[in-house]
Length: 635
Image 1 (cartoon, rainbow, N blue to C red):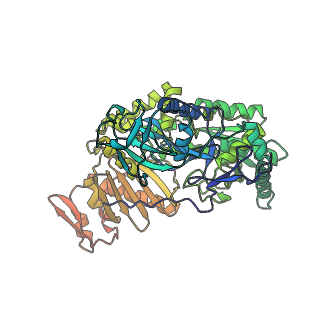
Image 2 (image 1 turned 90 degrees about the vertical axis):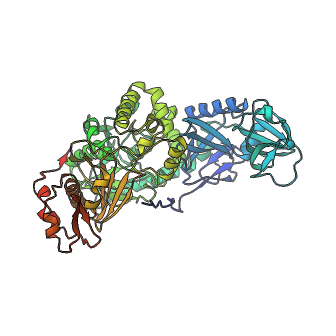
Image 3 (image 1 turned 180 degrees about the vertical axis):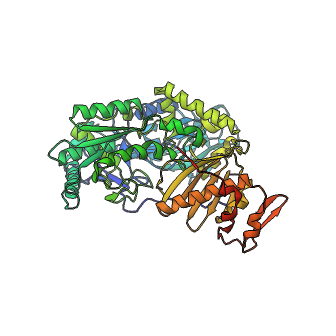
């Protein structure tokens, strides 16, 4: 089976640039600086442009890399922005003084940080160091993208090692490259020495003055104020509409920065203190739980805490670790507790979701009804804000925020969430070794039971059921098998996650677990549902039907997607019956006789389904197995 991966693109109306005041040397969310009234210079950002302030922990990571690699850190107390871009893990553009100095990334292959300097970054660092530097003779022609031999190396610092990123200098030209030799071998004749990535001029410089956060806030204050007024008008306007006027207003408060701003805006928009609810999934960071309770208590906010208890751990043995493409945990730990708030009847929920956060949220509307909680209407007053604007608002209003943001976490959701980054898991291990040990122990036992090496856990492969190309490539580089052994030796049983929920890709989804099956054994039976594609390499079987799709993974977990809730539930039941038939088939051949298309046959005791099958399901009605299969377990 060949997988087709669509190139994800953010909507074109997202702003992928900011401005930088040339006189005050600080970032602007509007073109005009409120301090000096100068027009800011445009700084282009990689999409989606959800730029933010560098946290103290991230600043320490940058400092350590610069000192370790180049023997200097000239950034001092400067304002540093990080802009999230695509990558296999945490990957950010580093912006200082309006210059994109390079890319800071956490590499899953080495489980460590790396800073890749841009030409501007190389020019800035080269003013302060001679470490990791190679100087070239007057080589003729363009150098970008070319390999230079040792014959053209004028000088090399003693600390250069093969594979290092190095600053490359030629006269007034400065760029970046990769060392192909150790420093001691750079004097050998006629050998390739450096692969030059890019060369350019050395005009980039750090600038004066060096502003502080208070200066940045004052320079952006009018723009922040207007953003706040617009958001409050959105809240007040909807709450005053005739159809919602009698609805109570709640704020979904997760303890994160976005919901903090949504809560403060609602408090400012109303004449009384708002009501808030906090879904405690049982997997929240201790700091988050304490912060949410303390903030609401100190600010006289009526907080309802909806506690999922140990629901996650109760379901874990059936469904295995959740994954980015298999989020059964959200239904158990979030959806179920959230339904309790519906007891108040119709109500409005002010939510801090933003379009810049992810592909799935990039097209959220200003408001929408919750398909799973009757009577709930979600309102997104900051949907068009970027992280930079969120943080400027927090500093402008002097709001206390979750301390985890200063500790290196870009998001502060569940501490074992598969959507978390490898860099954040490493930080989790440092800050909460007890919690990390509990989860890591489970993951390694789970992997060992399925014939997967420790590297499968170390490098984060467990976070997908169906691995994307970037992770397949990493697996090949590391020599790690990412397909678990079939669970055919287990006793057959089927379980489902309670509830059906909207799928991020559209429609609805249900997750299930079918223990005791092997993918090759179910292929023929699943042809009665639709078109079947199977990849042994990826360990996944996909069934396309008129109603939706069914994906079954080698570890026995499966996911059903449909266009609406009823269709999805029906398809789940049908898929579960087919799985039961595939494993429990008695070979009675009644289905063969009942098929009007003569599309069913038996070979060596195994069922075969021919292309003539039109999925009429008459075979299903006569099957002894499905007639006596009993109910499907739910948790």
